[in-house]
Image (cartoon, rainbow, N blue to C red; front, side, top):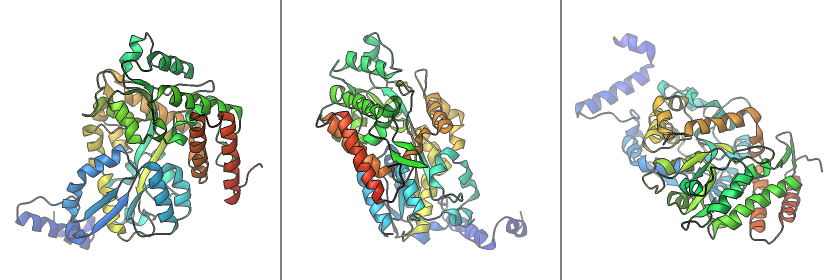
Length: 455
């Protein structure tokens, strides 16, 4: 192909950069890095970023040396616990600080952080052919996972690394079978299974981590309770209803009677380790934490783990769905370098690699989800986990019951839910009294924030 023909397909600047990179690496018989021409540009730069403790972040951190070698930059990736990360990020973003170059956009904070203009509009990066290669394909990301990362005009502020779907896992499904029972399909079934298997072979029947406003709400909704009256239009809290108290008492009982000692302080990693080691049996959690029970080399329960749909209460089943994504804070010092990191971490190659090599399941690229290899990888001992995953995503997409979680005021209300559940589990208050107190505190906070309510 002549230079004239090549020039029709790319700008002269990009052509010369690409040609120079090819010649330079060809001269020494080496393969050019993934990011052509960027290694010299970013050499010596330190990129600072953060997200919360998560399986995805652990995998990305493992592969960081490859990115650092290709680009010449060093990456400092901080991984505090979920609540600590959100507190620090919210403070840093609200002051337009410059400490971090890239950050996770947390699902429950997305409305607040993007709505307040605290993240960088990524459209200029996406549309610049010198910054984003055509085969990166931003349109390959599943729209449902991207919905919380765009503004009202459709501008993208982040790209999703997780489409979280809550399912149930039983690490010691064999204990359930030995008791003559099957995986629970209802709350009543769940109680029976926990009662029949608790402390059998030194295994606790249930476990979850301390992100209570994530784990508790499906149980509240299962009894017909709601967090807000009609989100996002009507944000009047409804935590003082009998249905909310019933759901809170039911879930608190699972933690109080059937979970390991100290469970109220369990982090995600601690709860996951208890499942991997078979020290706790049942957990209702995002698939990203559940599927490694079947595939991880660290799992001691690969032969006994069973998977099922979230058990249903009298009002139905309401498994949680979330989506988190990487974005660039408005005050970031190294935005172009941060974009290089985001492109690498969420490239088709990396997403496919994590899905097929690491067993990471809540992927957000359509091309990976639809591949036969992914479907095959999500089958374990005849159990079709991919179908469970899609069932949850489709349920949430058609009913919209997760709207409560992306409104800007949810973090304040979620904090009240966390504290109320702790008081219930430790029997400092009854469920009704604890949730009434949470209602009063939530209303006070929302009034200060100027939220209109039916009160």
